[in-house]
Amino acid sequence: MIQKANKPFGEVIESSLQHFTAQTWQWDNFPAYGSLVSIEQKPYTYIGLVYEVSTGSIDPSRSPFAYQKTESELKKEQPQIFEFLKTTFSCITLGSIFQERCHYTAPAHPAKIHSFVSPTSSTLSYQFLARPLWIQRLFSLGGIVTNVDELLLAVLAEQQSTHFFDAKKLQDFMQTYSLLTANDYRRIKLFLGRAAPYISQ
Image (cartoon, rainbow, N blue to C red; front, side, top):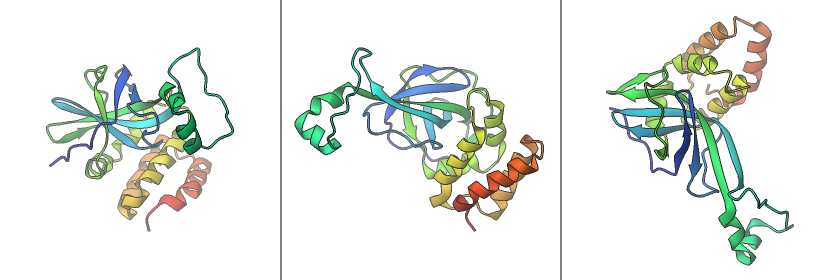
């Protein structure tokens, strides 16, 4: 049984079949780079991978100013300045879940504007990442993500606490990665060197 996502924290403001951008409801509550988020759009659940996060001013004519004060001091003395901040994040649509099955392809329709975005539960993340087909989907969208290896490392880091990448899953992961990089020995060796701290033994 697919476990539902957690409480929503933002909504979609731009969308296509391949990726979407969302704005958080609170400027300082946003997903981590390399984390999975989900959108309920019945009968589908879309799975997105965060590849960009940005915070700035809501008003183009107003820019944040360096006050030389801590965040707590600013919240006490000038709390109004935080009302002009917004955070957006962009995600690749890795696939969807339909009738309890994971699909690693572009959805038939883009996520709807103003759809709510939620963090993906650990159970759902585990189920979706269990097959390395999501890596192929990520590589196919290399035109959107300029540094695929960096994003893959972020996924490994995000999943480290769950001990998801055991020996078997790591083997499947690296076999898929090797195929998608045309068995580039140098690239594989460098990637494994950087991935070592995040891999469960």
